[in-house]
Image (cartoon, rainbow, N blue to C red; front, top):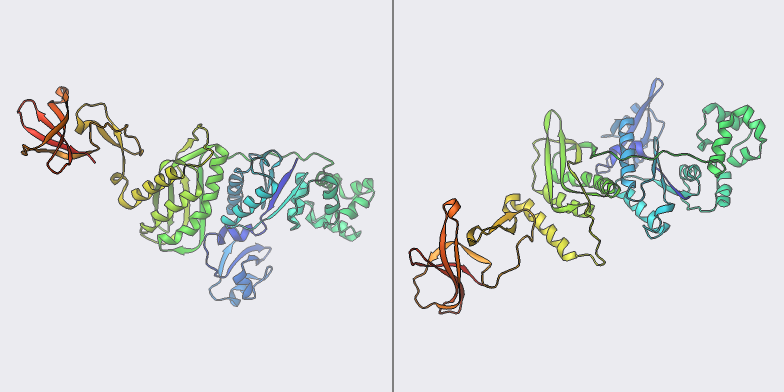
Length: 466
């Protein structure tokens, strides 16, 4: 087996900072005993002299405009679950390692992603798009890969022997052991995993417990490491807290795009697509503002969603400042089972995107496709539909352009070139007609579609040929 471990070493900070591109000083604090201390800070805060372990009051005195947030364990758990959803685009075998890690079993999906190098490249790119930083490491054992990632060693190790050599040099502080065990190892001079391996196993077990040896053996692949895999939720809903209130809708684009890769991963994992999305903008003491995105056809392409999101936000106005956003997929649709194309139909995809953008700009009811209706009367033989391209094949004896209403024809110099096509219909709804249709040519050579009303004997122009 081959495992990919991702260690999100700044997760407590990124749950707040990834919602904006601004570089305002930001510090995350947590109460430790009787003292509230800084546990994480961004680069702008560090440039002001703020560091991890500093008292929160001292940090605020160092930097004007410092944004201080209390650590949110619930938000970190939600973010880790969102990352697991995103990781489903690579493999369905994703395991959570709270509070800041993921494990992916990738041996079975390397061919799908064209090799390990390409998979790692996609994973690094996706992590960055969502606003996170992570250390990625691969190994033949899940716990061994995780220890490499926690140590900040970005290596892809496939051989068990080589993994053992690298792990032997890692500090014992990386192990998931009680503080008393780690302190005891330090007192006897066992600073690395290799030092522990050189000690008598029976003595180590008696003094520090069997769990220490079991953890090292799991890392080296000597013992199996059973993992439970993440099960995606039945519906998609992800929220993002903004570090500061946002007043303009367009400014939400950056934050909303952080959530789209998670949605794309969710849809890939579920083998599904969506035709509508909702972006809820949360205000203080006001009802949410809900913006809706509609697609001409079901899709799971994050790039396409991003374009439509930009169009929607650019034409929206917010009644108040926004402190958080929520992206929802109200209805998840099964992915079509049709075979994929060897060469992507870019023209069709571009046409769908153009249609969606026009609907955002002009309104959903202003842009529609044409479908056929079971009626012989030309003015009733079509219908508006949401799906484009629904019209039947053109009939060369009928024009594509019908006039809004037939116009009386008084020009006696029309030349009838084909016909008649007799239509007698509509008696059941009170709109009965009795007409003989002809293709005619006027004195300028234009092709017209005319008919003679068989009741009144009057002639009318009903359409024009291109």
